[in-house]
Structures are given as C-alpha cells and as structure tokens.
Length: 238
Ligand SMILES: NC(=O)C1=CN([C@@H]2O[C@H](COP(=O)(O)OP(=O)(O)OC[C@H]3O[C@@H](n4cnc5c(N)ncnc54)[C@H](O)[C@@H]3O)[C@@H](O)[C@H]2O)C=CC1
Ligand SMILES: O=C([O-])CC(=O)C(=O)O
Image (cartoon, rainbow, N blue to C red):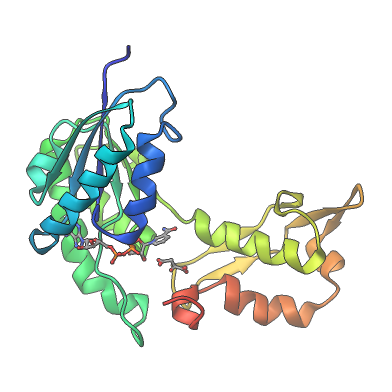
C-alpha cells in the first residue's frame, strides 16, 4: 500500500469540516487506494467537541484512515503535512459583512502561514476555505514565503457554481450546460458574477447567456444579488 498522505483540516470541530472529513476519509478526495493520516486543528475551547468528531470518525471505521491526531497546536497539526484544508476561521455573525472579519482572520491566517512555513513540507498543497477565502489565501501565502505561491488555492468554486446554477435553473437546463461564467472580486457584497462571455446549450444549440435568458433586468439585478456577494450576506443563509 502507498505511504500515507498527511492531511490537515483546520476548523475541524466546525460544520464544514463535519462533512468534509468524511469525504476525505472515505477516499473521495485522494482516491480509494491512498492511506491517510489526519491531523485535526481547532482552538482550545473546542477540544471537547473535536474529540467528539474523532469518535464519530472512528465509528465510520474508514479503512484508509491510519491515524487521527486532534490538536490545538499549529506545530503538531502542520508538521510534515502534504495537504492542508484551512477551513477554520472567525464566523460571521448576523449584521456583519465579510470585511468585518478581516482583522480577526488576518491574525489567524498570518499565524497559520508562519506555521506552515516552519513545519509543513515545502511541497504542501494548501486549500483555503475559510472566507473571505481569496484574501485569507493571500495572507497565508505571504507569511509562508518558502512555500511556492502556486501551492495555495482559494476555494471560490462555490460562487462560480452558484452563478451557473442560477442561470441553469432560470433557463431549465442542467448546470453543466452553462459555460464560461467568470467570478470577479472578493467573496463579499462586492463580488461580481460575469456572464458576458458565458454560453448555454439549449436543445443542442449553443447560445450566449443573455440571449437564452431573455431578461437583461434579471441578469443585472436579482442574479447578481443572489449569485454575487454571498448568501449569508444577502440574508438567505446565516
Ligand atoms: N469557500 C467556500 O466555498 C466556503 C467557505 N466557508 C467558510 O468556511 C469557514 C467555516 O465554516 P463553518 O464550518 O460553517 O464555521 P463554524 O463556525 O461551524 O466552524 C469554524 C471552526 O473554526 C474554528 N476556528 C476558529 N479559529 C480557528 C483557528 N485559529 N484555528 C483552527 N480552527 C479555528 C472554530 O472554533 C470552529 O470550530 C467559514 O469561514 C465559512 O465562511 C463555508 C462554506 C463554503
Ligand atoms: O462562507 C460561507 O458560509 C458560505 C457563504 O458565504 C455563502 O453561502 O455564500
């Protein structure tokens, strides 16, 4: 069997990690033949909850998972890791914008960048999930200068998928019929989904999205409010 991949998930006692950890452990991310060592980082007050998550992972008896290390130490979580999913961050409370979190998150991602630089493998791949993911990724990479910049990715696929799904639902096609949607800007109220170059396949014909939707006011109004910015911000999700 292959050498285990050492994978760290931060914010491991939180909601996103709760579903992500199962998918990683089940082989959906790194393949069904790849054994794993999971290091799970959260803050000290969350250690009890994190131990509960570990018990649940043990209950799943996932054959690929060779070891699980719950910890509140960045050094222990990041030492010699191959991959990091940086999910943990300060959650937004009702009435706050993403930018209100920047100070708190800048501290977290500065500290984690410094620790990755010091303890992780130089080949580590880092996926930043905690929002605003692109800003957090930039901060983290800045403080980890010995790790190549291209090893850092911000997970903005959510915004892209959301825009595609809005268009697909409006036209009544599958979301994979919608192509070339572009997302500009930060994951906040200033984020802008751009369909000016997007196309959609309808009944075997490829059409520009504007032509297929036939409702410019919707594309320039509600589509942007729901797809752009974010749902927690626009009051749909809290
Ligand atoms: N990029 C994307 O597509 C998505 C991003 N998100 C973002 O993911 C993040 C997590 O969301 P949820 O799990 O719902 O939040 P949550 O509040 O349930 O969990 C966050 C966890 O992070 C932990 N945490 C806080 N500071 C930490 C630190 N310094 N080190 C390690 N852990 C720390 C908290 O204690 C908590 O357990 C949020 O920023 C959310 O906005 C959520 C969904 C999609
Ligand atoms: O970060 C999250 O919780 C996801 C998010 O902003 C959204 O659903 O727009």
